[in-house]
Structures are given as C-alpha cells and as structure tokens.
Length: 305
Image (cartoon, rainbow, N blue to C red; front, side):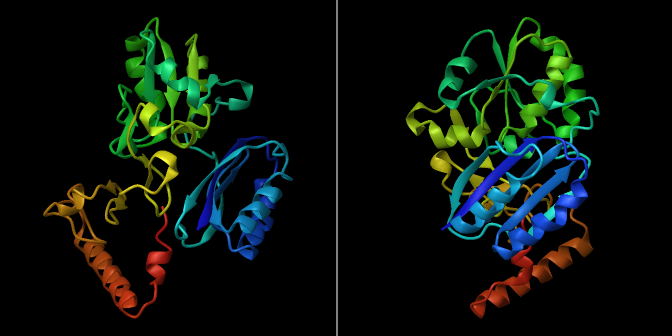
C-alpha cells in the first residue's frame, strides 16, 4: 500500500528554479513519484510513495520559504499511481490567466466538510463546481452548477457571461483539493460578490470525512494519477483513462463499440488521427507483450496524468 499526498500552498518564492533540483533529488532518493509544480506564487502537486518517503519529502517542503505550516491531504493506493517524479517550473501553480489574482490577499470563507451540506442546501446559495467538464461528468454535488469549461483558464470568461444569474445569491464553490477555489473565490471577491464560500480541503476531504449515508456527493471524484477516480473513504473508483483523449471512462463506457483498450473511446474514436491511433496501438501491443512476460512496460509506467 502506497501513500498519496496532494498538496498546495500559496507563498512567495523569489527563485523557484533554485528549489527545483534539491526537491527532485530528495524525492528520487526516497523513491517518491508524482508531479510538483513550482512558481513565484507557490507550490502544487501530488506525490506517492512509502510512508517514510512521503514524510521525507513533506519535511523538506516545510523548510521552503513560507511553507512551515502548509497542509496536505493523504489517501491510500494499492499500487504506485505514478511512473516517475517530475518537478516543473510554471508561471502559475494552477493556471487561471488572471495576473491580479492573489489568494494571499484574501479568499472566500472556508467551510468544513461537516458544515458543507447545510450551506449548499440553503435556498439563497448557488453552488458552483470550478472543475473541468470531464471531471464533473463522473461526479459532483447534487444540484451544483457545471460551468462546462475545458480548462480553469475559461472560468473568468464564464463568470462574465453568467454573473447576472447570481444576483442576491451567496456563492459556494468547490474543487478537487481546494487550490482552484483559492483563486476563483479571490476572483469573485474582486468582482464585487459579497459572500463567497469554499469547501475546505476540497472534495477529497469531504469524501474522507463525511459518511456515505450523510453525503450529498453523487458519483466519483476524478484524480490526476493512475487511480483515475476515488470514492467515499478515498477508495479507488471504477474508472479507467482513455489514452486517446485522456477522459475518464466508466465500466459501461468500455463496453461501447468505439472503445479500444489503450487507444480510443466514444469521445475520440472518430477524431483520432491515423498516426496517433497507430502509435497507441503499438504502445498497447508492447504493454500486452510485457504483461505476458510478467513485466510492466515502461510506456505504461510513464503514462501518468
């Protein structure tokens, strides 16, 4: 059993590049895999490893500027959900494309998972899912509004077109682990929205803390690793990933005539270019041959989200 740690923290890194090498080497030395982003505005990532390995990386992150009190969320995984360790430099640790957004200057009111149900069922509250459409498709809170965005960068434009729908409403927002809500609630406050709330710890914390019988969550939660989705108690969900278009697929989706394991699904079968289809088929053939030998193909190991 591996430990998966999802983390983010908004702080000021004057020189993110100087932090990149030591963090990568420490993670690799402790056999931790996953992906971490570094930017001037802070750190964001998901990593997996043994208990000792995760503890070593988290201890190192706490020594970074402004990170002494950063928080993270953990969940179990029966096998390593990442193929390698990556530490990348980015302009933003979650891309919204709004240069004036600064969560350190203020965010919406945090709402604990145990208080979330009461908030989102209040008649004067509009609940907005800030995630992408392919994430929303496999699960969301009952009654939540889906902006239908393909990337978080589209959210400000969606709000500009739809803000009239939320006159005299309190706004409650949620996302996977909380990071997108740090920016989206800061954005709405800057747009003049008076009362903005967001789920502390995100969907992952809600699924960890709130019993299934009391839950208003419907479906599974997409995660950016080879588990693809998790359910209540953060147990791995039933979804797989389409390697043609990277969308999550339910067991029923894999029965569709357009589904080809390791290649395509009904979302992308008609639009997949021949060269891409041929490459995916060859990759899947190599994975199958490796499995017959009792090995794991490197292509499968490196195909993390």
